[in-house]
Length: 196
Image 1 (cartoon, rainbow, N blue to C red):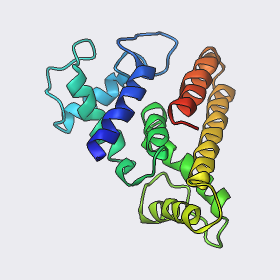
Image 2: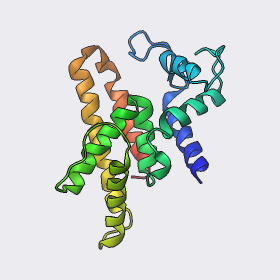
Image 3: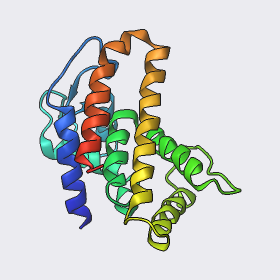
């Protein structure tokens, strides 16, 4: 089941990422399948891909390995409910796993409002996973439509993402030209793909 979830999520994310790109205004620089040169070099050092792979000749199988080990597994997406797994995976690819988890932690704190808030540390540790399970179990124990709190959590995370994109532009006006694409592709279309 987890392999199917990953494969389905990867197809959606690759649809957003596209093929080879080298936009001089994009802070990510040269990319292919959404993989940056820095990410590729890190994957080579870790032994995930052969050392002779370049951005221009990277294969889909190499990209899959990098996405699975460097993003999906890091955010523990197999432990997340659907469609939160897809949303967090896309955010991890686009912003880095730590930022994706921080945006989730902010949402969990606002929804659960328990006495002990989660640290916004970007680590998908046992407390964050337990908080996600709390939201899931609340869905099953309350008079709610199935998955309505998970759905609300997903939407709240996406709203945090919009705020994050806005902060990028506030801090670097040169990135403003990407804002519409980020909102349309990485928020609105992702929301649709997630069935929200």
